[in-house]
Length: 124
Image (cartoon, rainbow, N blue to C red; front, side, top):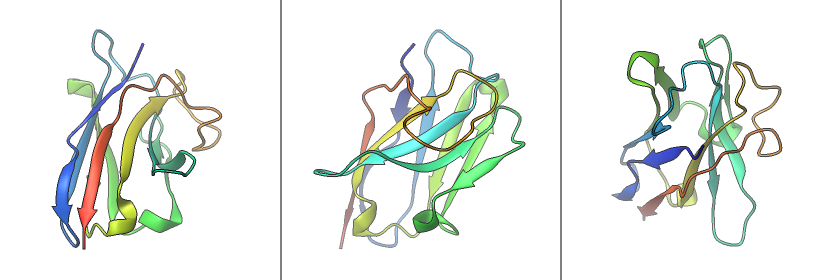
């Protein structure tokens, strides 16, 4: 299984984007889903994660108040709404899963099944 992230693009600072995560050929309503990002020369870092029934959400400090994770289990899609973007948010964004309903941590050591990611570029 490879999760598919889409919705990236080029946006000016202060702008917004909404990313989507799907699992082609699979439903993901029973999986926790996480959004991660990797900038050039940096390690992949957790941005936001959500359990399968929204019992738990996590946001990294650097996105709190700006990004919102949500899931539409009826349509097998998880979204990341990104507002007030800044150039430091420029990165390749991936979605991943633990394959389980819950997640112990929003970390790339427990999430996987990455797809190719979607590029987000924020200009100043």
